[in-house]
Image 1 (cartoon, rainbow, N blue to C red):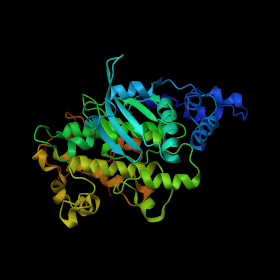
Image 2: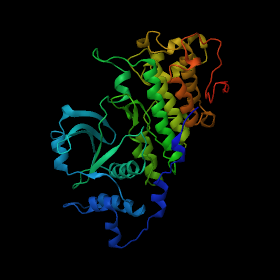
Image 3: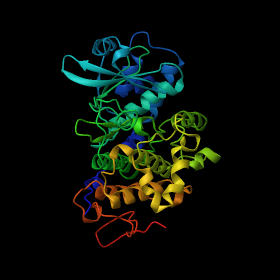
Image 4: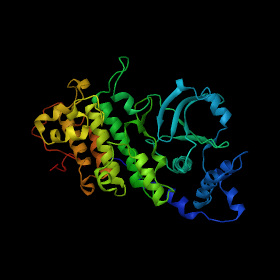
Amino acid sequence: MRKNPLKSSKSSVNEARTSGRYDDDAGALVSSPIARSISMKPGVGGSKQKMVVEDVLRYGEMRVEAEVFTFCELAKATNNFNPDLLLGEGGFGRVYKGHIRRTNKMVAVKQLDRNGVLGNREFLAEILTLSLVHHPNLVNLIGYCADGNQRILVFEFMPNGSLQDHLFDLPPSRNHLDWYTRMHIAKGAAQGLEYLHDTVDPPIIFRDFKTSNVLLDKSFNSKLSGFGVAKFSLSEEEDSAFTRIMETYGYCAPEYVKSGEQLTTKSDVYSFGVVLLEIISGRRVIDNARLTEEQNLISWAKPLLNDREKFRTLADPLLVGNYPTKGMYQALAVAAMCLQDEANTRPLIGDIVSALEYLATPDEEWNGMADGDGVECLLVPKDKNASTTLE
């Protein structure tokens, strides 16, 4: 039976948004620790900094339990942001590996692009969000730096990098992921999304769920990163521009691509389906190095998902057949449900978690190595006698 202790927990995001007292006078400014750290540094000024502080005040008095770092300390930790220590780069900045000497701790240092309103507001949104949500499958914020016009976030370091690093273009020295490790990673990522969708109040829509945002600790447990940039304080016009930046091509739900509909939790479910298919197949969602008809993973895979005899074609060749046939069938069925064109036909993330908890368990009877040709597709095996059949 599935255990879900998180359902009883309450997020303080909604409370933080509604319980604070907004005051226009100058005294209100210093009531917020974040506003104080941003606004009272020497040399800080200008409309962008003022805009960030105003955003802080909208959410009232907030106590953020995150360490404040100086720019000098983080420069030393990253060897002056040495390119050799670069872990990754995205639309809002770069992430470096760092070592905090006074604590002897390895960290990931995210230096945001200082140009543009989105970069400044992304910084604020990520601090607020990461400080108010806590879950084993979400990356942990250690601290931040707001010296001058610097906008830097400091996270726990993930020694196994991202899921992307273990699926595509593997160097000879790196072993491929076995089947159950893949399902374990998928399960953890789904649990992180479930917390954001079902426990946080109001729900947080990830918006940019992809393999590079699924980080892995030393035991290959998933920790999601990048969700702090979810919609938090943007106007309607800015939100439209923000979404165009965030939703990476190939992972974006069709309803948004076609008509620009507002993103929802079901949009995240679609993106999860893309990632799950990447996990199963070992293929990038967009790969221009492949044959033309295989460059778009979803377009190539969807016809195969409707033909049980061709399911094995979707398996990563690196697995060389070392996976449970029934488990493979079930995993592909979950991916297919997530990738439905109509948003309201996609499953809830909680149902996906239920299915993946079984798929990640080697000793489940129905998850054995036997041929699955005669087995119905179980989307959500609530127990061994209950199932939902994929139509």
